[in-house]
Image (cartoon, rainbow, N blue to C red; front, side, top):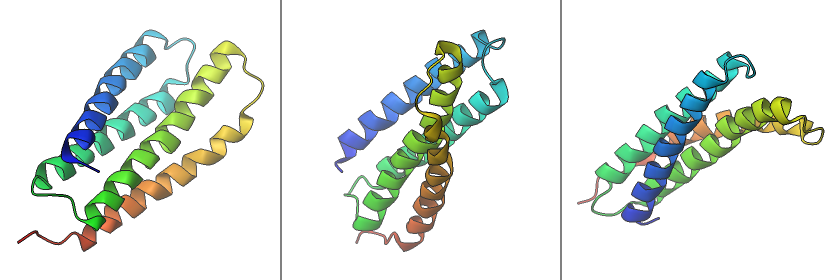
Length: 125
């Protein structure tokens, strides 16, 4: 994953986090705001971790950093994304997709694996 691609991904995740956070604030009466707020919080936390990887990896991202970045992105999509989908499913009465909640813990495991993969990041010489 190239530095600029990772930075663009961080920019999109950050911007969408702001949009989704505002949406949650304005739709309090409809959404399960605690779940929605958790999804936004985790999206922002892990977007900042991605930003740190992009900044620290300026000389090039080694395999550990690439794996970690990919797992952070997967975690955001699976963990936060599944919570967003479940919240919107209630609003729009979408009957299909009840299985989406099963992706939330998988996303959480991606976050854990991403953090642990940083243990193997070696400094570029």
